[in-house]
Image 1 (cartoon, one colour):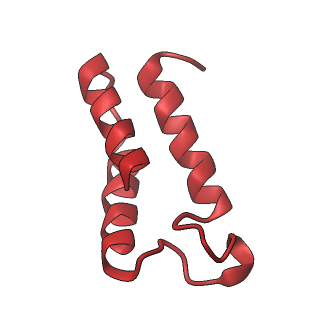
Image 2 (cartoon, one colour):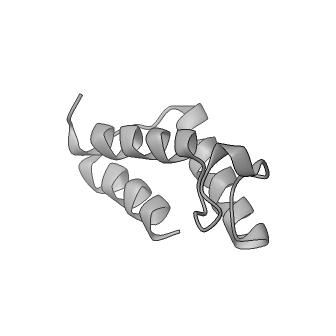
Length: 71
């Protein structure tokens, strides 16, 4: 949850405009983590103790880099 919040705050602070898809991604993943404790259902997509799947974590890193102005 903290990583999702940090990515959104960093984008807002830097004045970076997230795409509609990225904005929806952050919101929907956050909602699923709050509701279910994790944002994916298939155990083959991520480790049992993780709240994000490998692909969700990867996309979150991309959004964080975009917010920092990195490519």
